[in-house]
Amino acid sequence: MNDDGMPRPRHMRQGLSLKAFAWMLIIPVLAFFAIWNVVPFLWLLGLSFYRYYPTFGQPPKFLGLGNYISLMNDPNVWERIGTTFLFMVSAVGIETGLGLVLGFVFWSRRALWGRRLALTLLFSPMVLAPVAAGTFFRLIYDPLYGVVPYYIHMLFGVPKPNLLGNSHTAMWAVLATDVWMWTPFMTMMTIAALGAIPKSVLEAASVDRLKFWQRVRYVMWPYGKFILLLGVILRTIDAFKTYGLISAMTAGGPGNATDVLSITLYREGFVSFDMGTGSALALFTLFIAVAFTSVYLYFLKNRESEAVS
Amino acid sequence: MIPATLDPSPAEKPPANPPAVKGSRFKERVKDLSVWVIAAVFFLPELWIFLSAFKTPQQILAVPPRWIFRPTLQGLTAMAHEGAFWTYVFNSFFITFTAVFVAVGISFLAAYGLSRYRFRGGDFLMFVLLSIRMVPGSASVLPLFLMYTALGWTNTYAGIIAFDVMFSIPFAIWILKGYLDGVSPRFDESAQVDGFSRWRTMFRIILPQILPGIVAAFIFNMIFVWNESLFNAILGGNTVQTIPVALQSGLNTINGINWQYIASLSFVYTVPLMATIYFFQKYLLVGMTFGTVRGEI
Picture 1 (tube, rainbow over the protein chains, first blue to last red):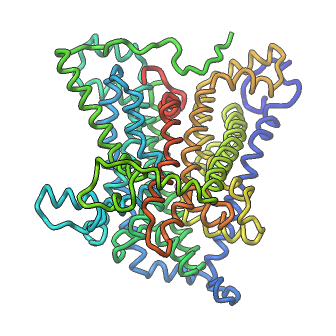
Picture 2 (picture 1 turned 30 degrees about the horizontal axis):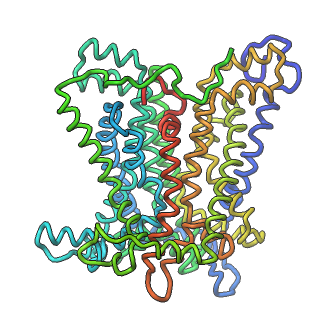
C-alpha cells in the first residue's frame, strides 16, 4: 500500500517518499499560518474573556463570558450586522448583474479596436487604493465643491444635495462608489468564465443555431459556472470586510448609517481601546465569516462535482 | 516533449473578424463605439483624479468643475521635493515585491505538495485559507498589533513584509493549486522514470507548465499588497510607511485636506498598476480561470 494510494513502479520509491516530500513543501506555509494566524487567534480568544483597556494602565480583569453576553444584548450590534449584510448583498448583487452584462459585451467583441486599452480603462478602478478612491470621492460628493452634486443640481434643478452627510443617502453614495470600483472585477470574472468554454463547443452551438438563452443554459453555464461562482465568493468576502473605502468616505457616519462591522471593530480596538469587547466582536465576526464561507464552498463543491470537465 | 510556454493559448490567434458578422459595417462601428463609451465611463472618476494632479488647488475646488485648464506641474514637483515622498515610493516597491515574491514562492511549494499528495485535512487547510481571507482586517489587526508590540516587531520592514506574505498566501495557493491540478500527474511519473529527482521534476517539468498561473498569482497579489493600508498603518507606525498610508495621513493635516497632494500621490501611485494591467492583461484574465482556459478570452 502506497502512502498516496496510487500504484507506482518500484524504482520510484527510491529517495524521498512522496509523503515526506509533500510535508516538506507545505511546512513554510504552515509555519506562517501558525505564527500569523493561530497565535493571534488564540490571543484574541483569550482577550475576549477579559475587560482590558491598555491605555488605563490597569491589569486585565477576567469576565468569563461577560463580553459576549453584553454583545448579544446590545441592539446596536445587530443593527451593524444588518447594515453589513445590506451593504454586502446589494453590492454583490448589483456588481454581479452589471459585471455579467459587461463581461458578455467585451467577450463578444474580441475584435474591438484597441480592446486592450479599453479593458485597461475599465479595470482601472479596481487597482486604485480604496483609501485614495474613498478620499477623492468625498471631494467628488462634496456639497460645495463636488462634481456630482453640481451636475445633479444642473440636470434636475434641485439644490445641491449633501449625499454623504444625509443618513438616507450616505449608504447609497458609498454603495455607488463600491459598484464603480468592483463591477470591473465581476466583468473580469465573466470574461474568464466565458474563456473556459472550449472553442469547438461554441462553434457547435453556433452551427446548431441555438438561441441565446439556450447557449447560456447548455453551453456557457456548465463550463463557466465554477469561475463565476468563485468570483461571487471572492467579491462577497471583500464586500463583507470592506474597510478602507467606507472609513475614508464616511467613517461609519452620519450617525451610524454606514457603520458596518469592520468600522465598528476598528473603533472598539483603536479609538475606544476596549480590547475585550473588540475581541469578542472580532470573534463573532469571524464566526459569521467562516459560516458564510462554508455555505459557499459547500455549494461550489456540489456544483463542481457535476461539472463537465 | 513538454511544451514550456508563457503563452496561455499558443495555438489560437484572434480572428480578424468576429465569428459571426451580423449587420452592416456601420452597425458594427456603432457597437464598437458604445463599448468604448462604457469603458470610458468607468475611467471617468479616475480621470478626474488624474486631472486634479495637474491643477492648482483653486482649480481643483472650482465650481463649476473645470475639465479644460492650463496644466501645472506645481503639485507633482512640490511632492517630489518633499523628502519623505521618495521613502514612501521605495517602501511601496520594496515591500510589495519582496513580500509577493516570497509568498508566491512558498505558495508554489505548498500548492504542489497539496496537489500531488492527498494530505489528511488538505481540503480543510484550503478551506481555512479561504476563510482567513474573509476575516475583516480590522478584526485581525488588533491581536496582530498586540503580538507585534509584545515581540517588538512593529515599525520594522521584516514585520510588515512577513505580514504581507501571509496576506498573499491564501490567494496564491488557490490559484496555483488550480493550475497544478490541471497538470496530469503522468508528467511527474514519467519524469521520475527518466531519473529526475522530485525537486527537479517540480521545477523543471511542472513549473514551466504553470507559468501563466505564477504570473497571475504574482500580479493579483501585487495589486492587493500595493493597496494594503490598514495593517501597514498600524503595524508599520511612522517608520515604514507606504504610499497608501501616506495618503491616509495626508488627510489629517492642520490646514485641512491638501487635495493637490492627494491627487498627485494617487496619480503617481496608480500609473504603475495601470501599466501592469495593460501589459499583463492576458494573465489577469487567464489567471482567474484557474488553469481551465479552453477557449478565447
